Length: 180
Image (cartoon, rainbow, N blue to C red; front, side):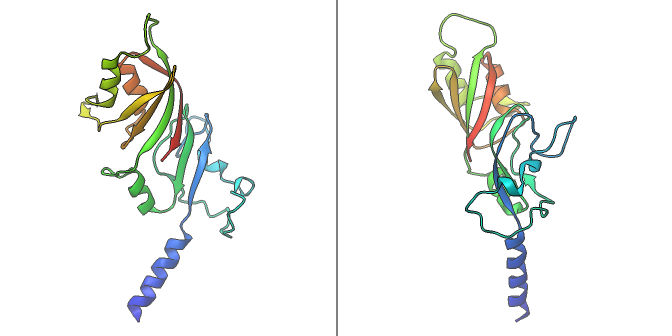
């Protein structure tokens, strides 16, 4: 009976943990406030709640709500904030199988005639890159339109897409996460 009571207590605690999906605009930081910029958690308000969310959890219960994956201040799109470590580990753990998809608007760092990327440079983005002397996992990279790439990653190093693009002579002018 004591074990059943513990499981019930654990289950109740689990149900009290909150996970929020939100669209982070440019100008907010994913985590703690820094350099005068507000954290994205300030966007979680009663007024912004999904109309079909019938939970009665208090909006003041946001303590411990942390990002499950960064989205830098200059990027926009899907951000997951959670109080549940299991959710965070599933999404961003070292061996997570979860894909993160981004639309990335690019231009050549140095104007050149011809395509924005050669087939060899596109292949390099997909396979065989390193950041900080560590190999990156393969990425799915394809053209979404004439100046926008679609990246699908299974990892999330700091400013990874921007740094990958720099290695092939591209400058990122816009980055939006559209799927996790």
